[in-house]
Amino acid sequence: MPKFKRITKLAISLAYYVCSRTSEAIRRLAKGTSPPTCVVLYYHSVAAEHRARFAAQMDALKRLATPIPAGNEDPLRPGRHYAAVTFDDGFTSVGENAVPELVKRQIPATIFVVSDSLGAIPKWDAMGQEECVTGTLMSLQQLRELPSELITLGSHSLSHPYLPSVTEEQATLEIGESRKRLSGMLSREITLFSFPYGAFNQRLLDICHAAGYRRVFTILPRLAFRSPQEFATDRVKADPTDWPLEFRLKLLGAYRWLPYGFSAKRKLLRGLALAVAR
Image (cartoon, rainbow, N blue to C red; front, side, top):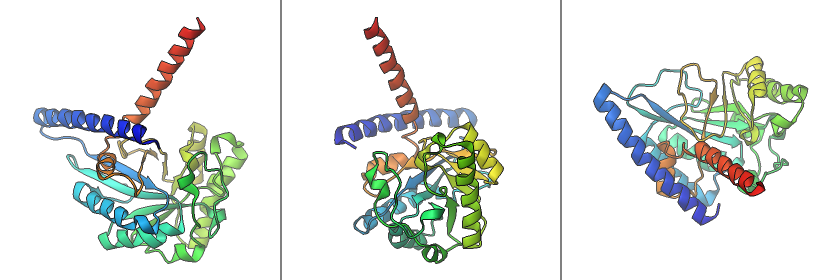
């Protein structure tokens, strides 16, 4: 991401955070409490040279939030901020560099794996995100060796396709069969699913429901666990190379303005295009 664009997002997020905190303080004065909040972070790889920075982020997470599993089904306590950590794709670097730091701090995490690519180098299209497809994926043996009491495994499909563009039959296979294969290979229940590229629609949500998943995950940077019945949970993209303030704001939910910003930008560009056409 160009530095200017990154700084602009950081500045807007900081202003958004100040405003939201002020609003929360007023609500607390009026009602005596505030609702719980939660952010689910998602990473891809954690390179060896970035391990110390990831560790510092996990220290910040423990200071600023209560860590919970991404599959949490317990009610959140009012007035508290929670955070969950997830990883998409299942890169070897996550097992080598992230998991030991999580174990050291007893932070639970979920790793979403592509069931038909275990131990391989990813073949799927990066779609402009080169950092997301570098390195080797964990093998079945490496997945089995992860500490099951702290690390949950979920499905990221059979082959990592862009699901909205495939047929219903293909989508059903990618979503449902990946769950069955992982359950068989790992001898554990698979109840969580992460959409490849974060791409989903109502049809895909219905297929996930029918496949038996208890929760699915998007990449919309909004607050998570907003209702007890929530099925599709939003996540905020994190990276070990995030600046400390940048990561802190992501962790605290200050980047949740982004979907509205993108929507406003699209409307503005559409309006300008219509004006020029006239």
